[in-house]
Length: 286
Image (cartoon, rainbow, N blue to C red; front, side, top):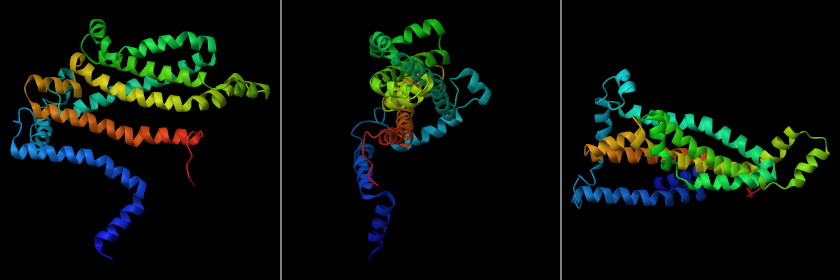
């Protein structure tokens, strides 16, 4: 048996054929785009002002690091912030908004969904709030809070809260009332009904709302940082575009995509799969 065959068998045992096939199929579009990017650089179909070489995008990381005016100046002035500070600034805002928005959205959604009349009354409000993009609030947010972190946090919370609240409300309302009656008949308290009936029954919808809120929230954050922020990846892209630094714009776009893909693949997808498998919505072979 050749070395290549042994390596192929080892890889299949490590990942499994189905998973390996999904990885390969998912990588094909990215490999194709990277190859076209290389061909454009080699043949200069489009000038670098439109699509810069990959080497220039890579070098932009080190150039941005060298432009930092110092840690304290970067924190206070924003515009001189190095690349890593922009990344951590965006991640910090997302983390803070999730820490506040997710518990509030889930709690209010469960409480509202437990009462059918309240749920029916608040459902149109949830539809109305989710139909308005978080970015639509940006002009008002700038008037209310000015340019800075408060504006971006407001836009993020507005996006995250309503998506989680609406999905939680629908999930709780869809739980058959007979389950609640069964727990109450057996002597269960209201807390037992929430923890053993409504929350587990609504968990698939809650996880879907969390995944949607993080996706839409991440995009809303970048747009808010472009217009109403003073640091972050969106701010970096906006400033770089105004200075015609296309390689830094490409760098920001690629980093945004990579962060979201890593978060989605390593955290949200496994959580969603575990949820639907745990509560019997799909069958997991033994």
